Amino acid sequence: MPEKTSYQQLQPEERLTIASLHLQGSSMRAMARILGRSPGLSAVS
Image 1 (cartoon, one colour):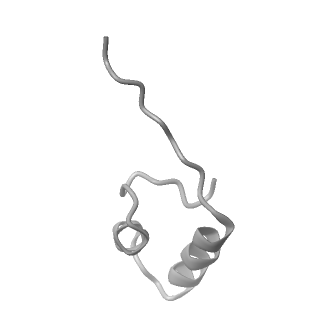
Image 2 (image 1 turned 90 degrees about the vertical axis):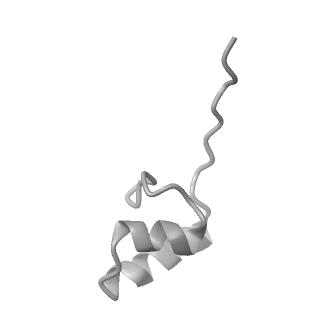
């Protein structure tokens, strides 16, 4: 039986970091790399 995938919501600090990086024009991949998250993370969640 395959292992269950667990998901973790973004923390408030991560949301602030994403907002700041977005204003600076960072790409989704760059934001994910900085946060140590998958590039598929949802910045609007």
